[in-house]
Amino acid sequence: MGKINWCSDFCVGVAEIDAQHEHLVSMVNELFRAYMQGREKDVLSDIITGLSDYTAYHFSTEERLMDEHAYPATAEHRIEHREFIDRSIDFLLAFTSSNQEQNLAPVVLDYLEDWLFKHIRGTDVELGKFLRDKGVQ
Image 1 (tube, rainbow, N blue to C red):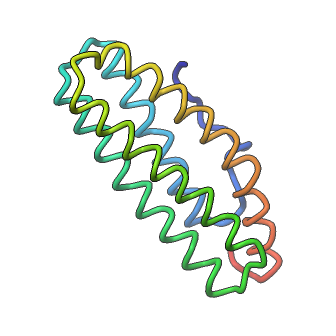
Image 2 (tube, helix red, strand yellow):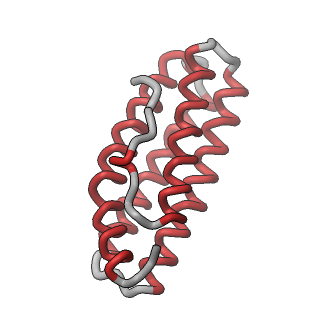
């Protein structure tokens, strides 16, 4: 768990998706900073809620592009999105109903970091290649 440095490995070559990924990374880093500063539970909860909301917006962007361009792996990609949303809801519920936010925050941060690296560098890079081949920039 640590600050995520934005790098070209996160770029999929589609400007709209890349800008959203960069914003997601900055939001995860905001959560990391707040946790490291020992911020209150409500502050951490607000950041997690904002991150969840923005992620849903980002997923809707990707899914719109997949639908518009008949991406062949749309179903599998949507499953990954749904699993992330379900896990995020579980984290948010546990976080808001627990007095163990200092123990739970590192678990959330580790999950977010791991998911961002795997999903963006794998699934989203493939989507980006497909969209670029279709002329989307």
